[in-house]
Length: 225
Ligand SMILES: NC(=O)c1ccc[n+]([C@@H]2O[C@H](COP(=O)([O-])OP(=O)(O)OC[C@H]3O[C@@H](n4cnc5c(N)ncnc54)[C@H](OP(=O)(O)O)[C@@H]3O)[C@@H](O)[C@H]2O)c1
Image 1 (cartoon, rainbow, N blue to C red):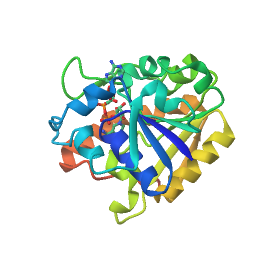
Image 2 (image 1 turned 90 degrees about the horizontal axis):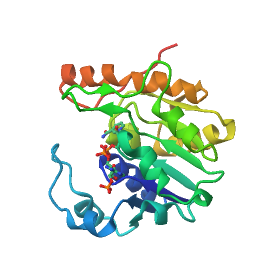
Image 3 (image 1 turned 135 degrees about the vertical axis):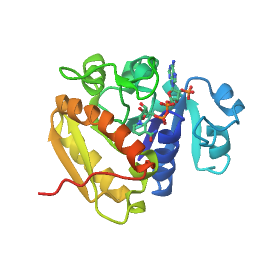
Image 4 (image 1 turned 90 degrees about the vertical axis):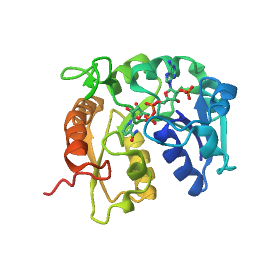
């Protein structure tokens, strides 16, 4: 499948790399290709710059958000949640029409420091805001509840763990469920329409506290029933 992964951070790298490993045709989207390839310093968490990472991945291309989306069959939103709508607005409407968008972004607001708050919650969510701004997209909120390496390679945890999909289009959720299964996810729970993204996004305050308590981002929940 031709896939556009919008976002060059650790999520974009993990998801793009996994899709490429699985034989998909992957283009990563960024604001400015030359600027992104010109940055080589690791981020604050010590993750490699995109340029360093992609140098080891000749099977992954880099283009602008708009160029990556053009001709793609599936889109992934791995941009900073505070700018996801702006990033998607740079894409031609025709390149969004009818496509599935896996929305991994979280609505984190770091303006008051750490831990971040949520800039939308309770009665709305980033997933819903993206769906409302781009009604031609089939938005499926997924994978925003775990750290990037585990999104792409869930078997890094030895026990089974759960992930969630939320969206208005049943076929789109089935498509995303199949993709998550191809990554190795074995417990994908459909939590309902896109308003269910409120719940998966509002899990973030607990996720952040768990990361502090456990001193690692390598964990996830299992929904036992
Ligand atoms: N890190 C995790 O493990 C994790 C886990 C769950 C969910 N998430 C969510 O996944 C998303 C990606 O996270 P991340 O840590 O990989 O990276 P990030 O630093 O949150 O986002 C990086 C991306 O945002 C783009 N961006 C930043 N400012 C922009 C602007 N003004 N206009 C357009 N685009 C802009 C960057 O574009 P350029 O490429 O041009 O620099 C880059 O592609 C976030 O929403 C995050 O909350 C992350």
